[in-house]
Amino acid sequence: MPIENNFQHDEMSRKNPGERITVREVTPTAPSESSSGQDAMAALGKRLSHTGVRVIVLLHGSIMGTDVFGVQRLDELGWLKRGYSRGVAGLDALLALMREGSNGIAPLPGGLKPPLANDDATKRLLDEQIGDAGNFTHTYLELMRQSLNRGLDRPIHCVRELWSCEHHHLGRAMAAVSMLGRLRDWTETHKLGQGDRILVQAHGQAGLALALVSNLLCVASSSSQTWLLGLLSVFASQVNRPDVTSTIQRIAPLLSNGTLLNGATLDVVTFGMPVRYGWDPSGLGKLLHIVNHRNLRTDGKTWLSKMELPQITMEMPIAWGGDYVQELAVAGSDAVPMTEVAKTANKAIWELVEPFDGFERWLECARRAVRIPSEGLGILADYKDSTGSTNVRDHYYGHAAYTRLNMMLFNTTEIVQALYPVP
Image (tube, rainbow, N blue to C red):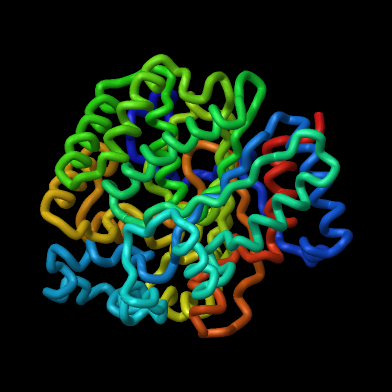
């Protein structure tokens, strides 16, 4: 996407990204908690520190209880209930694999639904219920903190953030504002400035919130930025969210004069993020997208996923082709806001950020099979999570692999080599 992207949707190009992407296979390495794994992580920590990384943020949501495929929006307008999918072979079976209640993904205890709170109690609940499946656990965080900082005079601050998991435009925009406030907090707390870097690692749709952050951080402010912050302020006042109002009041002038990070740089890595919003690189440092991908195509376009019906319904239950959530949670899909005032705000935002809507648009975007956004580097990594098991909890349709404890060393190595190579 262009500099000053101004919230345009990603063009979803099927062209070969060329040198922007690399292909990797996860090979057996020393466990991150082993002595040799700790040594390897410590060496990576020294490299990160040398390049100025002062804060690492692990940003994630929950696969359970959040309509992770976004089928509510497809159902909302009644197209599916009217049998719209008739005539498209395999589509009904595919939608059954995506829809809450029939996709095999259990709800959270007590019927817990988004918005999820970014507190210790909720994080502990996720650790208990889904472990390290699409979830940066407390164990993951502490192991990263201890191993990266071994031998460093200036420790890298590692933090875990749980976003609200409201899988719609309004929820992601609210999450973007919250993240901007947190970025300012870390900048002030750790006295960051020129030469310092914050590295955010975002799983799934948390990456889409960071895409909105990149547009809000654009060095040249736009009327769209002002409009979006104004709309969110009004919505916050309507639903009694003074925390959002105060955050916007605090960050708006800092965004206008480009001082929110006090000269520090924001780097972003996404894991399994669906290709939807466009990124504005002008407000970011480095950008990398990692996708769990196994090539099933026969046309030579190895950088694309395989979206063919009805075959996909046979591949999905064993995550044969990689991350199917990344592939299918594209424009036209979404969860539906709970209240009328939220629905009104959500509609206004999606008219800004995503011109695609409707069942036909979703099917078109899914069939484009795009793995890597138009901005940033990409890694197509075979996480070897397809074992033939049809138990959804083993892989969550390929979306769980990135945050596994035994993937920490692989992920960190790839991130350092891609973004902070030795000169």
